[in-house]
Image 1 (tube, rainbow, N blue to C red):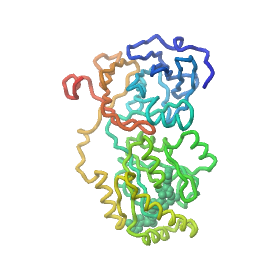
Image 2 (image 1 turned 90 degrees about the vertical axis):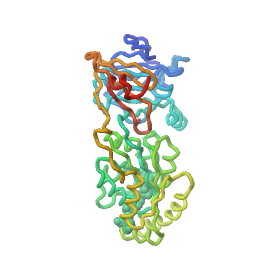
Image 3 (image 1 turned 180 degrees about the horizontal axis):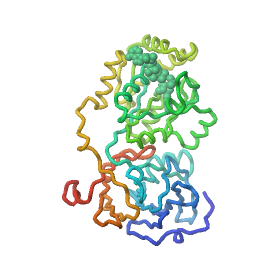
Length: 393
Ligand SMILES: Nc1ncnc2c1ncn2[C@@H]1O[C@H](COP(=O)(O)OP(=O)(O)OP(=O)(O)O)[C@@H](O)[C@H]1O
Ligand SMILES: Nc1nc2c(ncn2[C@@H]2O[C@H](COP(=O)(O)O)[C@@H](O)[C@H]2O)c(=O)[nH]1
């Protein structure tokens, strides 16, 4: 719990009631959700990032919540509205199309889970991505099976489609491994501290070292408009499966245990002792990989090209791609001074300067959310909507 600040919410806000259950005053906005009021914006007058304070209305107490996810940069004109009682849509006036829609999750399953875990008030940011970016892909399997090789082929053939989630690890870098590219190489004490502060989507002790996927690692890929690939062990896959991140889970098997050992030896990156440890763990992982409900697909990596072809097939990469024009989403920057009104799952956004410029933000097909990005937002001009092209009110 924070100290009561030297202001009350009505002093901060109140000039711009807009009929949406929110009040905003330029750099700040306030939204009611149940018995709490969320004050969002320039809350300390100093930070370049959007801050959040929570007023518990029944007690009049102010709470400074733990804020998860990448925080948005502040904006001079913020609008906000509550959706389904569990998340707040924030519109950042004067921002580019890839930075103007954000969701502050206040009571989603992820936030509730983190609230229980951290024992404190929690909110989580998730940037809204316009268009149909597909859900992340988790690739798992024993050490040496060829996960990295398959992922490298995919990234090489489809560089603008896929992005790699760069994990953190306490293991020492191998020759040719670059910090920030293959892994974020970390000190154990630092990584443990970051784990307890909620920075990681999942983490596990693997072959004697800590490995983990930060929320940011997944968000960076979504922000680049790419589909995220995670190369993680079976424990990590289980944690992601239990988390709120929707993903497709693929397990890679070797054709035989002998072949797995041969590949690991031929790679020549491990000492004999480490290799024995990895091979011991591989037996357990191969058993766990078959656990019902954990993996959506199992691929045997015998002949590399055949396995790669199967991987592409299950990711739908062998299908005819729609024309770019057909699938390209409408991307517009948000005017600084804008009006917002909500009709069902559709948000009508108008420009105060050019009244003919009105757009509809359609939230009907939202996917994902914190941790990670909120995908599936659709934008179209209000003309195409009123002409009946995009469904009825
Ligand atoms: N189908 C295959 N046939 C023969 N060799 C392969 C095949 N796939 C990968 N390899 C080789 O096996 C070795 C291990 O592959 P890779 O490093 O991709 O495994 P990995 O699953 O990512 O391992 P780790 O989990 O330890 O990172 C590499 O030397 C790679 O070139
Ligand atoms: N649970 C997680 N496992 C991870 C992560 N990053 C990598 N891994 C797995 O660790 C082993 C060993 O990798 P190596 O690079 O040391 O050979 C392998 O199975 C990876 O899939 C992670 O973030 N979380």
